[in-house]
Image (cartoon, rainbow, N blue to C red; front, top):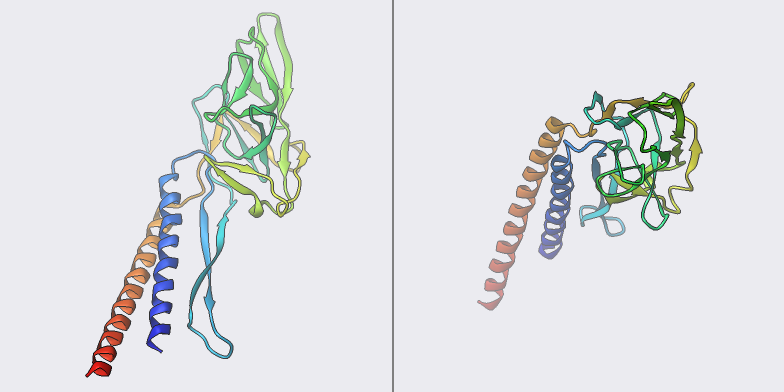
Length: 242
């Protein structure tokens, strides 16, 4: 019985440590544009006909709720107002997806993020003096020769976005569980592209701090449970020796 109590408390400590790690990562990225917070989910371990045998991790799930849109200072910053993801290409042509629209112009005219991913469908000519993006994703460049269409931002949607694989830095990759990306044109009744704005992280610092306090208290309670079970086992062993 004491072994089971010790196991239940120990698995509770491990679960809350993982929970604290997830919350700490949310807080560390609360100021990162386009970052999506995660939540850890757990389940109760139980033997047939019994309960309270321990705790097991079910998984870590990303929450894709919309972050607040705010004005940005970058000349190529864009945000998505509504569902969907920007489509990115890595150096090998592989696709990735993000809600972070903080881009800058590279020497080849492509728009790239800080990790070097290229925004698909857009290339800015060297002669461009300024760039604007319409809500339907049309990208226009103004030069001395006039104004011209130089690209179009298409968004990606997934049947199960919560099953995307988080590769870090607000970048995601498609998985079998998420389904294949479906390319959509922004504008109209669907999502829109907002030029000169960025989507802030959807992490609420106040809520994250409250969750951290609750997890710390649960961890401390489980730690006391481990100590109590260990002390009881020690006393029982001494009695058997006596």
